[in-house]
Amino acid sequence: MPLADIHSRINNACQKVGRSPQEVKLIAVSKMQPDTRVEMALNEGQRIFGENKVQEAQGKWPGFKARFEGVELHLIGPLQSNKIKPALDLFDAIHTLDREKLARKLASEVQARGFCPELFIQVNTGEEPQKAGVSPSEVDHFIKQCLGLDLKINGLMCIPPVDEEPSLHFALLAKMAKRNGLKGLSMGMSSDFESAIALGATHIRVGSAIFGERVKAG
Ligand SMILES: *Cc1c(COP(=O)(O)O)cnc(C)c1O
Image 1: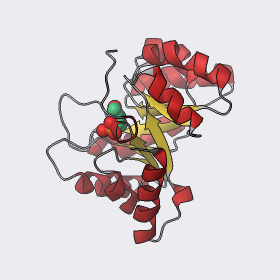
Image 2 (image 1 turned 180 degrees about the horizontal axis):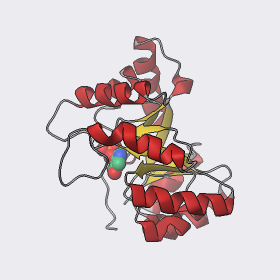
Image 3 (image 1 turned 90 degrees about the vertical axis):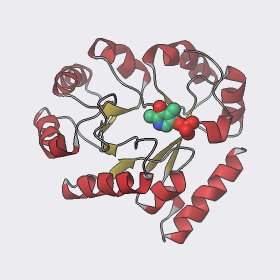
């Protein structure tokens, strides 16, 4: 679907609930997409992209960044603590902060560099054992731990269970962010970004609706 169509869907969703489209950042999720499609989006003016693997992004983005001004990269997949350095070299935002060990190592690297990416804490709102993220009962405590480490937390992120109504999870995430004074809400994907916008999403992560089905392994 052309980017212009995605933007008009975002505009409509915002209008319905009286929000400004400027409050909603569209992250084009380019993982496992062929370079030609990514380049097409860049040529259409898209500058904010999401990747879920550090290594895949390392292979793909330095080249694009050299050719296109103003690219902003968001890490939306799990971060291993031994990948913090390359992640900070490449990414402007990390959506998947989800454990104390990672927070501690990230904090010391951030101190050393004097630069902190935009940070989101991933919450496992469905409490699914196979999924990353802090459990809802631990969120408040984990936010305090991060703040205690001098990490600036922008907001919360979730990936709802595939077989449940996403709105319930978006509403829960919004409630947890609000009671902790956090403004950022990274929620909503191709199939549900309109309802995420209705519930306050500030960052939507849209892949297949923009690029089509993912094709490349990796
Ligand atoms: C792949 C991915 C997306 C994009 O999914 P689509 O359904 O293709 O829009 C969004 N968020 C995360 C965390 C992802 O891994």
